[in-house]
Image (tube, rainbow, N blue to C red; front, side, top):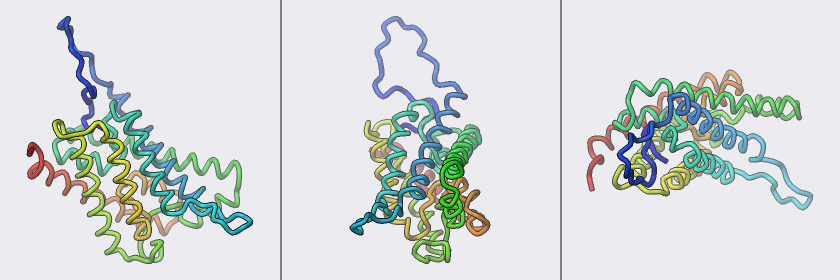
Length: 266
């Protein structure tokens, strides 16, 4: 997973004819890659939470749901898939907080961030709209229960799976988003990076979800939070600001720390 908006190939080629290097991805391709990556992330993660997390039990009492672990893996696996599929085109951010953190670290320009974020927000909304369309076309009772239950939105207090308050949600979002962005910056470093960056980033997101689903249903991604909250009702929407502001705060902290304390150090 690269975080340059026009990343270099993983393996440089030797050009013997001295012809100009091929142009990088177009802006339209970059925007589409971010839209598709965010779409897959939200469709896979929120879809797993809504369709499969609590699917009931078999006749012998064995749970058929995937639970917290399954949902955590769903979010991580979508990032792995998106990173390798579209990361070479756009850098594979799929998250407004990540984009802003990379800008703070000097990896992307501030001028490029609005188009990245717009693509990510659109991809997230299209994903939850797809989930709504599936529910509306197949099982109206399921859709009603999903929306009345908050549509896998983030929340604190009464909306927290574990009953954690706003302070816990703020701390979790700042710290976990900062750690997520630091990992991204570390594994995609121009000299210390790894070809397995996408896997490392996906597993880190899985770990983050394993820790924080009980706290606030895990954001660390404003696009994911907005996409779910628009179908989650008034209560999740009223709390949405927390899951926009504090992941961004954490990401900016990580970007600054990496740029001034870690960048260029061997």
